[in-house]
Image 1: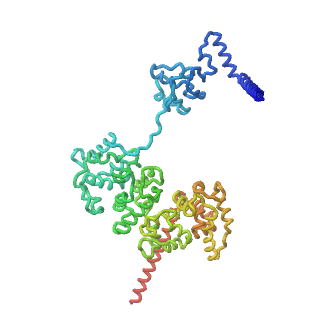
Image 2: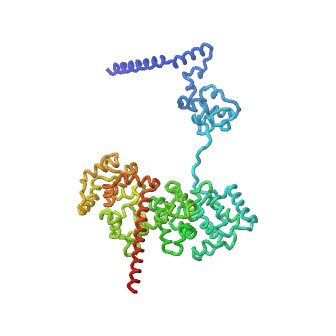
Image 3: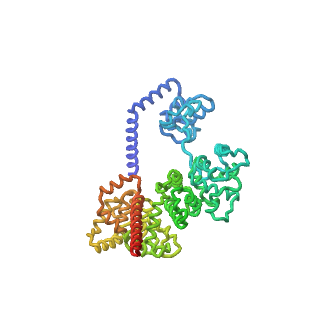
Length: 568
């Protein structure tokens, strides 16, 4: 019985093979191969390569066959090698013959070029006419500047010294103004890096009194001139003119660290406070100078220190936006620092500081839960505030348990007023993910919505059933699994992520969403198309604070005038 089944199977296989053979034989290409083979046999050419069934196969092939058209199958590797040695095209390459069994897998430099590369100029082709060599078009970013400055950079430094009348080796730079063209034109760094670099060079060569107060010595001229050789020595291992991000990183950080810390920016912010014309009015107010500096540094770390470890690495500087390097350079283009919205805007600082000051009633520069509940007109729910102070979204930097510091408040404010950024979405996602399973479900949303509904009832607003809210959220975010919202879903639907989180945490934003005027929203977008939600909120708050300050001034003048009248 088994023999009968085996014979039947063999017959079936044989009939199928015969079917495939006749199909192959009916192809025109197959008939052409057969005719060529018969003609070669008739001529007496019976070599193994001549009897190969196709130009793409070789009887002596010891390696795996390559697909038609590949560099291996066309013999381009061997052709290029022979052409380079003999100066003439290889026979296999010219006629499309089979590749040698000794050919190895081609390297990227000798592989067949894409169509766009075939139009390369003749200088990119080998002398023998083999495969075109594609010029290198990408270089990986360096992680450290060279230990010696390139010759062209040293020459440019030399030219600047000569141009300023310092042609002798003993001549040197004494003021930061003399150093400015080298920093901006040769090093490619911001104008506001001149003074810090000037100071760092003086410290490096021990020609400054480091025990004195920084503000008193920062702008003073060097007692010992900074020669060309001294500048070149300091810049070696720190400056890479073709890579401004790398130069920025190595100039700012400490010598022994591979990261930037908060205090590393102190010298650079002090320079801006002392030299930028847009901050002249702050020079006599030490407290506001410190708060401005803290605010700018906190905003920089909010963008680049995504893990909140207190360090900025080179990879983060290359990855995240807006670029602090480019923003630092923009400071030289605007005397009004409010025009630089990213990081340095005094208008933004004023709004942040005043908002914090209004909440901090005892002015100990710490906020507790009751203080934060007053934020935005008591907009946040109690459950939201409890989650914030549980430090689930992010850990506080404050050293006082149960208290939120100024830096923590800046982080919260940036997340609350611009909920479309990655950091903000991650902050609020962890806020609502009560069981920390990487997914927000209906019971977690209901936990926050219950308080929102109660507050609306107390204010005599019509409440919306939770089932309707769930339908709206599913339509808005379109999660892959209905009713299960993951972080990737919010990042994919970034435009609506802020609305989702606002509905369950802020009563003011919830009501604004329910009563929003789409025409007004569109008009705001048209008026300031480059503004983020954060920029728009700061602009509105600045006008509000300015109006309140104006009213206070008028009230004060009215009281003063009334007092004078009473005294008459």
